Length: 100
Image (tube, rainbow, N blue to C red; front, side, top):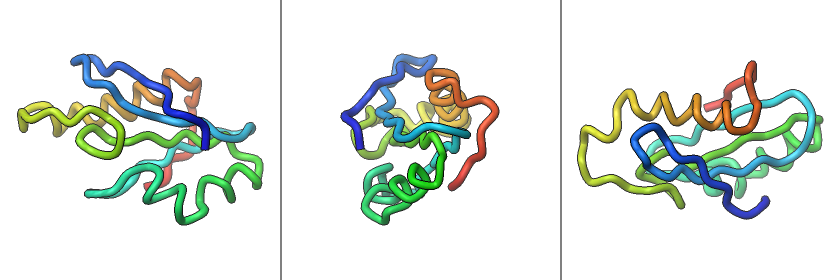
């Protein structure tokens, strides 16, 4: 995986992401209490998808991995959807397949 890239969400939260490969974009959204590297990297999904010709966009949801971890519960919820869209915009991955 490449080194961390950063998106600044609408509310200023920094979201860490990576892009690997070339081709049709696929956006990977990890599960609760995980990270992009744990959920998708260490399991081989990122490498496999890239080998199959996808441009793989993976990011750490706010509160996880290398992304910022706001302490205010109001900083989550629907704002997490905005983070997905911000990652897609920043990487030109629209339209994209989404895997979660």
